[in-house]
Image (cartoon, rainbow, N blue to C red; front, side, top):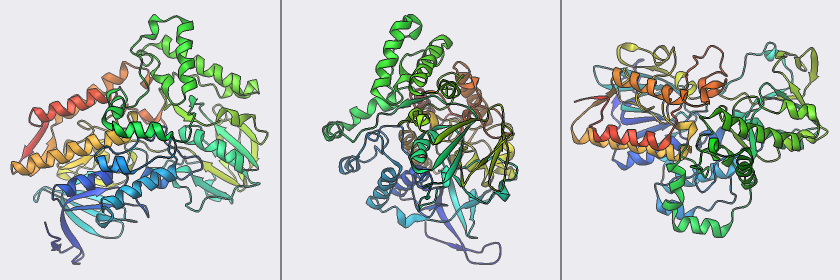
Length: 542
């Protein structure tokens, strides 16, 4: 299609027609642009940031790093791309991953269809025309047959509504919006609120930089040593020589990750045998402990054995017994996101680091000069909010998305997100969500998950074009059955047993619904079955 000019609401000739609008230029948006443009479609990508990269653009906090091995956390769609990119570490840092995103964009000339510093503020479906009208914060308007939301699962920042925050005179930062120029912390008194995966990465670096560091912890988290190392050139060479075979364990496991899953049941092993397996995986580094036994996520006794093993490691590492106990989680392993760290627990042995337990004494207020909790005031020059995101749904619901009959997505999801396959939403024709709620997304290696979703969406558009079809929409029956299935699978495991962002528990008032799908291979098989059966569960119209 050509850029046909249209008359906008205010009489301005600003609107234009394209085939697809993509919201977001992270790894999902970049690959969507590559695939859809390759089909001959005209694609417009909008990105709120001043550069591409998505989560790896925004999350520039000290210590930001991927907890999936570099060679697996990369695109598989181009053999040439695999060949010409070399990783420098086992687990890549944020700057290197962002550099990789830039390399991909330049290699495939993607930037020419990406408009930066432009946020999509609304997407409204025009039933008469069968098209989406998308508006941006720049006042632009574009009409598209398809709307693809590549807004990311962890991109809508969450800052709790602490009393007095507006009067604080020091500097405040959210880890998901860290200044590009960095922050000078030498000699400063720094407070960090949060102890999730981001905080676990940032705290050791902040402790080295700050004069004093106060860690305000509500809920302790399980973490395992990453044992990051420089990339072994021979290892990288061997992986590149047989990349498809190398990647296979990363997509065939339950999480689409190579945790070196053990088919053996922990229930049939003795306590000594369990600990031997845990110890071997602990020494190897990374998240392998969670793959130690096939029943670790469904058998409470096996899970508790893993939990107590990690607690024992914390007690061995942290010198102060009281601090060690405060750092020991009392939840099952994995019901919150498990973490891989570099010297996280060792950091609490530093004389300039203080752990403050706010579980039973929440933050009372932010004052002009610091923070008050537990009846004590902490003078702080800088406060870091490692308070996470409105996961899975936040970025979508911050856009005014309206489907048939003007129904708002926020209204439809008032009791929790409802999708079919995490790809489509009943009542919202031709709207696709990349790694949306109801898909493996955050419980899988994100890039293979992204590629699988984008390929499904691209193939669907080809199918529609070849048959003269103009609309695709999930049926209410398929959507309801899928939501029920997602939760039935989760309810067989330990996942819903604790207050995690997987169920939206970190956001006050958010409905408690388990949002990701458990089981990457099973999910892929279901998507393929849907296609084989003529897009079963979707209504297609000409």
